Image 1 (tube, rainbow, N blue to C red):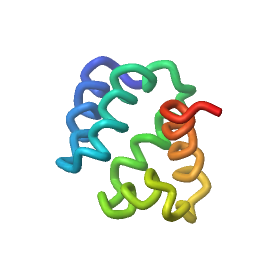
Image 2 (image 1 turned 60 degrees about the horizontal axis):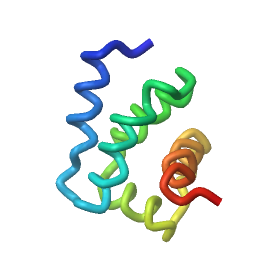
Image 3 (image 1 turned 45 degrees about the vertical axis):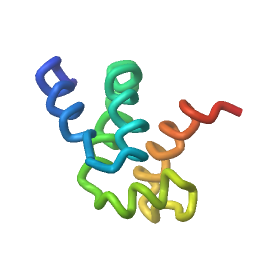
Amino acid sequence: MYNDEDVRRLRWQSRRGMLELDVLLVPFVDEAFVHLPEEDQDRFVKLLACEDQDLFGWFMQRAVPQDPDLARIVKIILDRVQPD
């Protein structure tokens, strides 16, 4: 379980310095992270360990993560901003 301090730390880690990533990740932490099941929260933490160029490609839908956990959390974030 993630406490308030953990969420603040994750919010800081979500600020990547690339606007395209910042506008996806920071609001996701602020508005959705605490409502995720713990398994998806863990996936998000794993996602933050990835390189910015990989994240950019995945979120711009130019590539798909090979790791199914990463693919799931990328889809959750994209579905949040691009609902069907």
